Length: 62
Image (cartoon, rainbow, N blue to C red; front, side, top):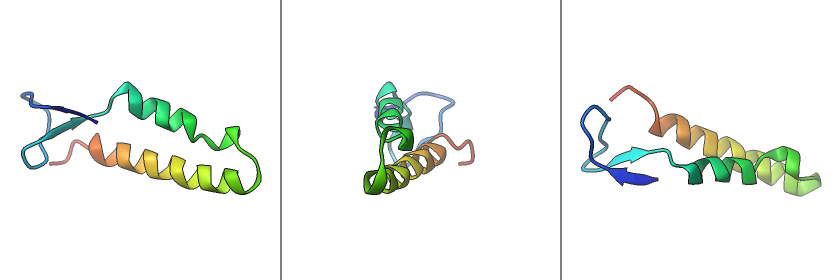
């Protein structure tokens, strides 16, 4: 996450968090379609965790 302080963007404590291209590359890296077997289960969990984190960080409620 990129740490910025900008007007109009919700702040969490003293930091403002914005999604970056790195977040998208993590989602692409852990997409379950790229894995088989046990690795696919691990990838599914990571993919869901990444999506949940993105949802929390981009939520407009503050």
